[in-house]
Length: 332
Image (cartoon, rainbow, N blue to C red; front, side, top):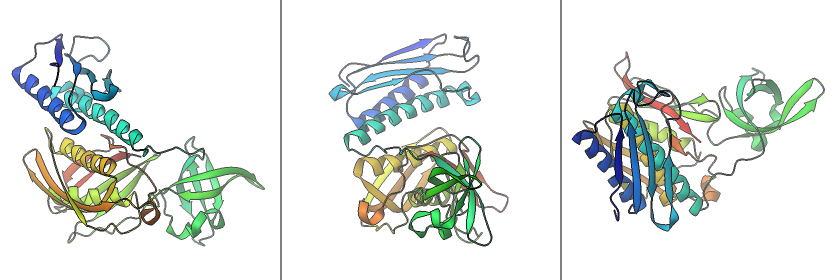
């Protein structure tokens, strides 16, 4: 970096381990986004400020070439995990990466343009296959007919599917027309068996959850990445080009978030989609190879653009049947 980043510990004394962790995160940012030209990292210790009580708070202000800046302010919400300095640092630098990733998308013209249509979640599908109901973001239930689902997509819907729609007044009250499925948010759920690793989508407001199962954590991570790709396109992704990725974190759940964000980053910066994954995990370090191809808008018809994995519904655990599961909500 051109100018050493200033590191300021407030209400606490920074340990060598903390300094090393910050230096590692800064180096990772430089590896991905270019050298840092200036910056300041402020770590506020528990008890050093009244607003968050016994939690750490990390603020970042970093400058990069071409006028790019990163500003990560206060902790967005009270989270007891912020009582661990490793988590607080990880969370702050994760948000920094998200800011820079959004800038990359803007430069490439890939930022998702939100439509005027509201988003709803399918709550009921009549057994006759003729109509259903969806729930709006303000909690109202609205009727829709199968003919209102564009591209003949009614039969691909499932309860929990995310859809965009136009609301209009019908004979019996509000109804939805021009109902459009959002990517694979039609909730294609792969059947789960103890013999094979599988994946699943699960609904969460306007976002989508991805979950994978496998005999090992690595296998569960692979299947969750398959679910991530399946949330974008219905079309087969040809495994023509390999891409290697590596990431690390302080525990297996944070490593899972890092893994999905690494996949999302490579998708965004390379304009690629990936359909096959091989993950290797040793301790808190992950190495992986992904195979995919450049995005073909006409053939792949991407229905959503993942922006980042979140801590919402984050869980990596061994299930009672012995399989491992890994899942969280992805911001789309």
